[in-house]
Image (cartoon, rainbow, N blue to C red; front, side, top):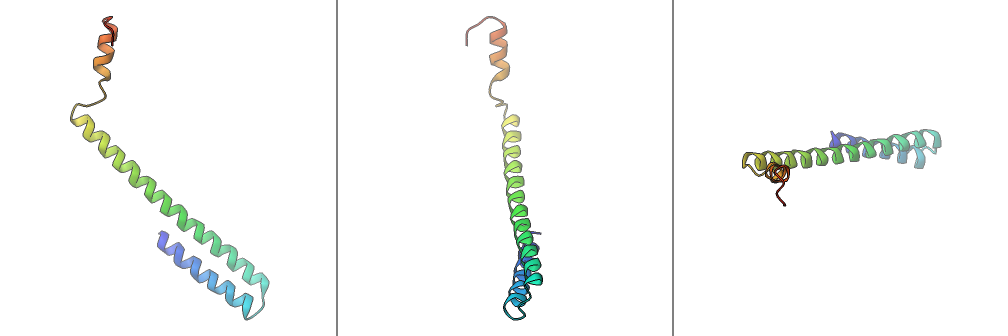
Length: 88
């Protein structure tokens, strides 16, 4: 999806340049430039979202692996010792 918005941004930027430089139509050029900027920032947004989703997936997998090994940070043992009045 991000590649689609990058291509769209490049095409709209080309249209903006064409209308500004060759036809001297500033209104159409401005609209195409604004749409190009929007498409660019949408591509950046999708790129960041995919990175965040990948990071969340890897951290969830690490937590699942940690829980399968029985390494949950020792909270159950610490809490049982504390409830029995034993110092940590």
